[in-house]
Length: 527
Image (cartoon, rainbow, N blue to C red):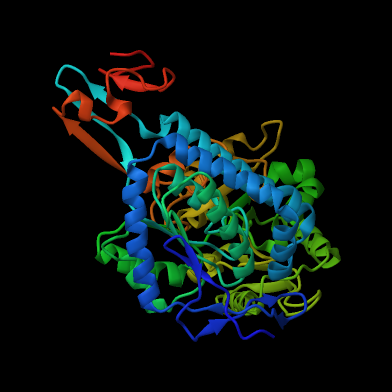
């Protein structure tokens, strides 16, 4: 094994770290360390990167949105040209299947959202130009400053800190990105960073528009997000780590956008079970076990009215889980955390219907797990029984009455999604209208008759929700143009001379296509 550490990217240069500390990624299926060694950067390198990012921000402010669009489009092209190597390493570091997950689904989603961000940068509609011509007051969203992106372990491509949605949105909005790789897939992140760096050179972006560090200490991470030079931070990961970063950022008054935890409740009404129990069981199995349950939109909580058909349906799901293949988890830490979460749910009053033990598949894995609890026990310990079991596990709650089901819903924390399955012929309509308002106010995305796992990259999508799903209910991490506005500030120009205004706010529409609010009317016309 080579003693040399992988290089970091700071200030437009790939170079050796001054650190002697390092870590290695693992092959989750083989339960073995991979040979490459990645440095743990000291504060000296973090601060150097932040200063370089600030210089890059000054340079980006002088560039056209067209240049940012060209960079993003070139990056998407380069990722596709290197897809075989990228997918191969991502599969080895995460054990996620090449097909269809990484190659057919996640990599195309990654390049698609990069190109959507490029289109948003080019067209400028996300900036919401607003003009009060009579009083000569004008405003729009403009870049905020260097953005730190902390990528998660479960999406090595689509949420990667150097190519994912947060990265693309931050760049499209006009900000440089300091990426902190996830330690589960540092090699994949390095490959993506190499393509981002080459794309930035080819499109003559400012040096340090994209920078990469692999790991820092927890204390240096908190110093990073609260630094005076940082514009904002995007973080996807565990709740404890995210809240520690939020505390530091809040203390310094710095925006931080968190995606933390979500159990994504699914309410299955009696008429739906009567009509299509087997079909719903199949949809649930596919959703809950997809990617070994390692999705932020995984259905981790199922609510039913207690009845013989409901108990029979749980038995059907149990049989399906026992017959299904057990997937490999992302690493030893994920396996340990899942087992600890299952144990915590048991201690809070739930019983294991099936699974709950390590094993059943290759490498780091846990048997497909179903837990069950009564509505009364859930209400007696609602907070503990909402702990996220990140992986191939779900908790079923049997409510004793409609009133108790309503009370359970009223005790739910914030989630990314919530779903209601109901009878297609209308037999559940009254019950649907009783329970849905309670669910709707606790989720960012409401679904009917559809499991929550899939997240489309479309302007109407909200991938957000009330705490603890995210740190703030008013943003989405997926969906352009809204995702760009996280990394922008609303800036007003009051009586500023016309030739000093941004192009978007001048009398002539810069593209002829840009929609602007002019004297309270949305129009594409010139003033």
